[in-house]
Image 1 (cartoon, helix red, strand yellow):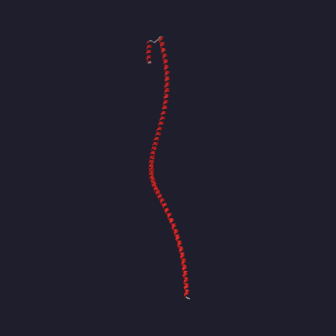
Image 2: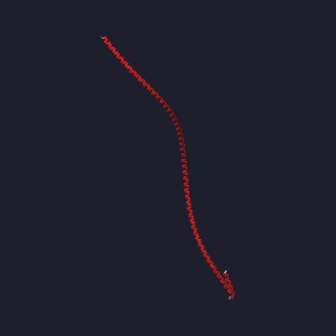
Image 3: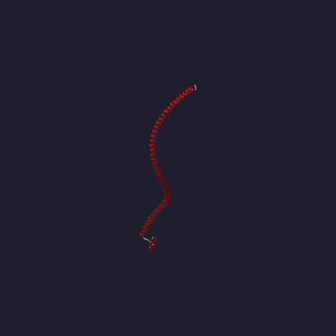
Length: 203
C-alpha cells in the first residue's frame, strides 16, 4: 500500500514538481501522523513482543510444569500401579491363606465333632456302666447287709454251740473223771478182794 501511494506521489511529482504550501503541510502532517502511528505501532509491537515473550516464558514454564506434573503423575501412577500390584498379590496370598485356614478349620471342626461324638458316646457308655455299677453296688450293699446279718446270726449260733460244746465237754470230763474214779475204786476193791481171797485160800 505505501508503495502505491509513493507511486501516486511520484506521479503527482512528475505532474507537478513543485508543491504548494498547503500540500506540503498536508504531507508533513500526514508524515507526522504516520510517524506517530508507526511509533504507536512499534510500541504496540514491542508490547506485543514482550507479551509474546512473557507468554512464551509462561508457556515454557507451563510446559516444564506440565512435564513435571506429567512426570509426577506418571511416577505416582507407576507407584500406585505397583502398590495395586503388591496389594493384589497380598490379597491373593491372604485369600490363599484364608482358604487354607478355612480348610484346616473345617478339618479341625470335623475332627473335634468326631471327638465330641466319640466322647459323648464314651461318656454315655461310662454313665450307663457307672449306673450299672451303682446298681450292682447297691445290690452288693444289700447283699453285704444280709450277709453281715447272717454272719451275726451264725456267730451267735456258733457261740451258743461252742457254749453247749463246752458244757458237754465239761460234763464229759466230769463224767470221765467220775468214771475213772469209780474204775480205780472198783480196781482197788477188786485187788483188795483178790488179795483177801488169795490169803484165805493159802491159809
